[in-house]
Amino acid sequence: MSDASDTAARVVENRIERYAYRRWAVILAGGNGSRLLPLTRRIAGDDRPKQFCVLVGSETLLQQTKRRVSQILPPYQTLIALTRAHEGFYAGEVADMPSSNLLIQPYNKGTAPAILYSLLRVREMDQEAIVSFFPSDHHIEDDEAFVASIESAFVEAASRPKSVVLLGIAPDNPEPQYGWIEPGPMLPSHTVGPIYRVSQFWEKPSPAFAEELMARGCLWNCFVMVGHVKAFLNLFDRTLPSLTNAFESIRQSFSTEAERGLLRGLYSRIREINFSSEVLSAHSHGSVYPCDLSVLRGNGLGWSDLGEPSRVFSVLRGKGVEPEHLLVSSGQPLSGSRAGGKASPRFVSSERVSGRRDARTLR
Image (cartoon, rainbow, N blue to C red; front, side, top):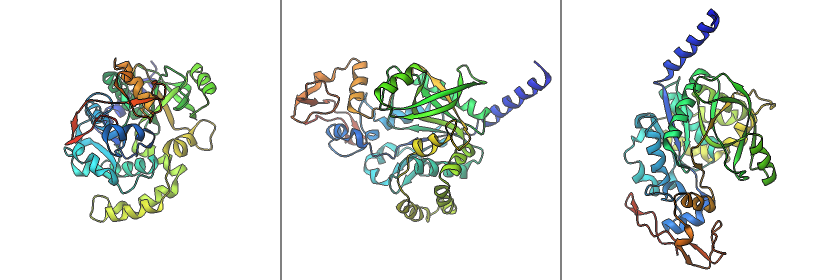
């Protein structure tokens, strides 16, 4: 190795070591879960979003996410983004968290405001933070493999402080309802797995094009991301500067009594904004913005976003639970049931979470 290469390697190693204690996690739990509401309403008996519902196993999806993230970072370095309208559903689930770690949005205005608000709150605590984002409503079969992937993402993000690292899931079928990431050139890796520059995002392709994307080695976008707080904010500065300015205008109120009222006023004025379509996609290769995005390939994680009843049923079948065995006649079929449209699933577990029954007979 030349002297220049050796020096460069030492710089990277020192950077990785410096950022090892500046890691933060944000769990995104403010969504309404509208697509799965026909199923979750029958399970829980109310309109709680899916992240506060027991779908697989004995824990809610938020509880599963908290447990998974706790294997990566301690609770005091973990924030949860929530929506105030859901307080009756999440209060018991976050009672063990410091109130300062709960980012309560007055309204759900999409993923972009939730992520930007979280970033600015993290920046107030640590201007050199490496931040990871985790959706709270997904299923992951292999927690150990997932944790290893996130560790690799943190290392790669620390070595590239201007880039945001996305976790791409190796697909096992050409799912047209997922977002896809097309990897570009391979980048020098500081971990075991390969990492690539992002070439292109494809949102919900046609079934035929999804097959082509899978054949081309594209990956599912699971919306798990890791990057320096400044790298994330740079993405917003380029694509949504007015949104950034709006949040910056109330920054002085963060963690004060004035924050709640000012935040409510801000959210009442902004539109609903999707982070994938309006921020990430704008930074693809060939776009008007520089591509500061890379993707790490995640293999064998057993990931599903549980966004449709059919995916919930698929996960249950993978665990040896046949939804057909839990069907009762209702005359109101659910999408994804294979009972000929004459029945809908019935969950007979009576697990209680936070004092509520979260898995009830579906009638």
